[in-house]
Image 1: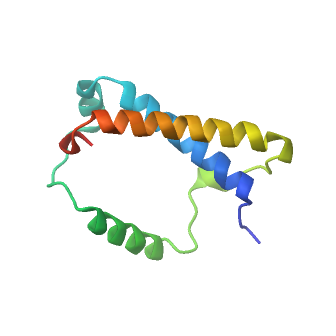
Image 2 (image 1 turned 90 degrees about the vertical axis):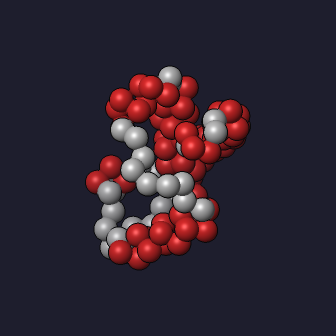
Length: 104
């Protein structure tokens, strides 16, 4: 009942990570121009996780409009999606290792 399949979750992750990889390939000054500069200190990982879980609780029952009409993912797409997700994940790891924490 309104739950995504494993294939839909994998596809969603792939669709989410690709634009992030693209953005992290851009010059930093373009990202700063587009999104501005952080107005707070760097947060610890545990603080980020705690805040994320708080926001999830607040958003219970709400779904982003772009997430609602997720179409079923054919089993035949499994290998393609998983391979691409692994590739994009490796790209993201490589790109984030090149950035300093203060720029992330």
